[in-house]
Every structure is written in C-alpha cells, then in structure tokens.
Amino acid sequence: MKNPIERVVAEASRCVYCGFCEPLCPTLRPGGHRGYGPRGRVNIALLVVKGYRSEEVVKALYTCLLCAACNTACPARIDIAGVIRDARTLLSG
Image 1 (tube, rainbow, N blue to C red):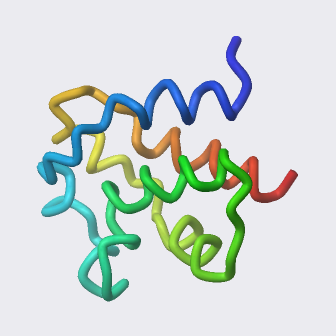
Image 2 (cartoon, rainbow, N blue to C red; image 1 turned 90 degrees about the vertical axis):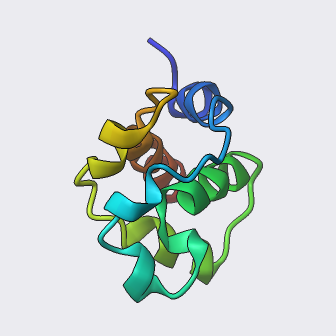
C-alpha cells in the first residue's frame, strides 16, 4: 500500500483542473476563494507534500466536509476526498 505522500501525488497529478467538481462543493462559495474548493484543495495537497505549511493551508484543508460529492463529477476519477484526508495526515505528522 502506498504512503500518504505517494497517494496524494498519484491522485492529484491526474487533475487537469477542469472545474467539473466545483459546482458540487458546498464549501467553495462560503470559503471565499478557490482554495476552498476541490481544485484548490488538490493543488494545496501537492504543496503540503512539498513541505509548505501555513494557517491558510490548514484552514482550506480542514474546512472540507469530506462529503466526496466532488468525486462523483471528476472525469479523471480522482479520489479528491482521499487526497484531502491524506494531506491532513501529512499536516498532523
């Protein structure tokens, strides 16, 4: 089984930032910017893998409800909720 870093990189690198996931995200609009939506969080997860940490990164990842609605719209079949879970694991460890 892959570790969280490998899973984030493998899943997130398949994202083509098409935006099909965004209309389904209940936290994008209240969040105020794209970092609070699936596309933004996938990109933020890659930053976490590279060692980037900030209060805004933590806030963006932990405001996700992990409802996985975005997963259903992703044409690349990325486990976006899984990417976010793994990025949270990396932040806590």
